[in-house]
Length: 435
Image (cartoon, rainbow, N blue to C red; front, side):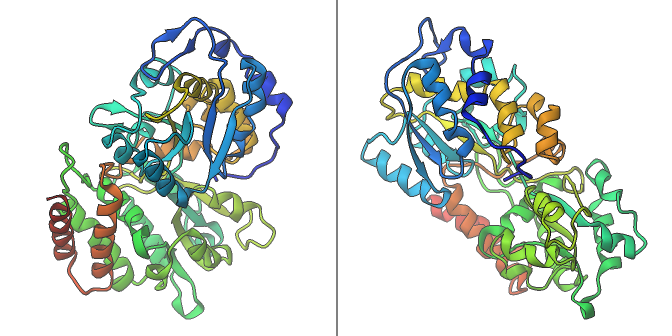
């Protein structure tokens, strides 16, 4: 979720908008982007996320245009990996177009289970203004295997009340992503806010389990580092990585300006209550928190929660959490699956998606559209975040090595290992798991 939802999607609005010229001309007939001269009117099936109401609502518009109503099955994000892998091992179709997360694409592509969408991306999405860095997760060994339907990555939220009470500039964080080494300013502000005796801490985050990966990845890339090199070999134990992890350790043990329970928080809603209660200065998490913080009646920071891209070291950076649509190898009707994806990612429907749902579109012109900005007030922040690195080491075994890395990061955060030893051991374990 990316913001406050103010409207509901209506069948009439989708039908009106999807009758655009972009969909009235030639249609893509296969993922290799050979153009067809007639629409595909055969049955089509979709596997969509259970949260993707905005895509499910396209079914009447698709039926209006192509004379067939898509068959839709939904899946929760946690169940997606098992469902796809079990089906494709058995060479069964679970949809002609499917929902995939950033973390799944490379693994599916490596097994040959996704069709190449490079032509569609290059010939249609790029000219339409797709955010280039949103394609990072979809790109594997030089080919693009999925199309980003909605984008989002962790950003910076701050409690303007606490900044004001400490005599700090409440709007300064808006510009930190443009300012080299502004992480130092965040730390300085957090120290001014910090008051543990009154349960007030400068920063809150979620670092339990694999969640530390997001903040470590942001700091790693902000410091000029990467998870993997061009050959997809692990290099997160670089000097940039060691410095990034040491920053996290220092926040917890040296500066003591981060909520001491941060290493126990496994996801955003573990960490958010203290921020909503007005007790935390900065919160590094997903954009949608801004809508909850600013617009819910029980929020102590209602109307006073700022939002901006993450601060910079050498640059600002974050870690991609976008969602995608893809065409599986075992699709029964890939041409119709492509028709649905093209419809969903048309400029008109991207604007409609952003103006009637909480899910930020992936096309830059849609993110800039007044109707989208009215509905998703932080759309500009999301767009600006994608002007900076958002890589997350998208290899075929990403899910496996993220677990190994996170375990070692946890040992550093609890001071059972130095940052350098933890990251060196993580790289050794990743390499061993691949041998």
